[in-house]
Image 1 (tube, rainbow, N blue to C red):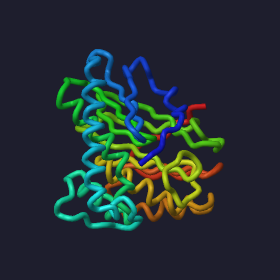
Image 2 (cartoon, rainbow, N blue to C red):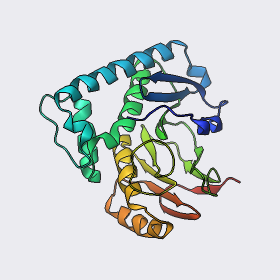
Image 3 (cartoon, rainbow, N blue to C red):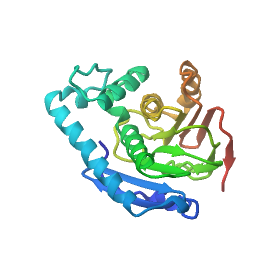
Image 4 (cartoon, one colour):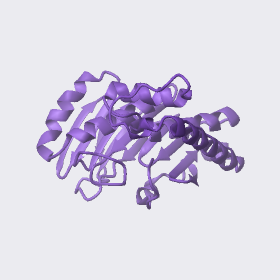
Length: 250
């Protein structure tokens, strides 16, 4: 799981559109935003309780099956594994990597679902270390944080409002503590399924070792029909594939 780090990119979140708050438990650090009209202080209590319960579920399971956490390859959980672990394993298997590659997306989605179950919200954003679970009523432009790249926060990904939730997940070899074997400054994947977006962002990010690999990995991504959009930044090179519009921000 992700370690605590200063989330400087969160200063870019639209605080007029989203009334936001942070919750933290052990290594997990979430930013949650809802439309201001729907915001309730009790959301923080509900979200934190769900986060703590979810972490306890995983800790208990991993004690019995520690290889689930250690495996860097697809792994089939035992029958006694919780549903969440089986979902992570399935998404990671499609991406060809280990199940923990989908943990941030899983936590973001479960917290988002818990808020929607207990409160009426029009828009919702749950961000977990660069992985975002979204419900939108109107278009949203997300700036892409890409570490030291000259393209960092200069590229905007235009996210159209859709029916139901979806995920936008980012993997980076040069930013943050999450495991990556690549050297990309940002690999952003948009999918309806946030767990699959999370796993694919990691899997594709692992393949980007130099700027020369960007075009090749964009081509390889055509094998994954679930990807709505893919954006890769490595140093001063960018690759783009998919449905979402790109805007120059600066």
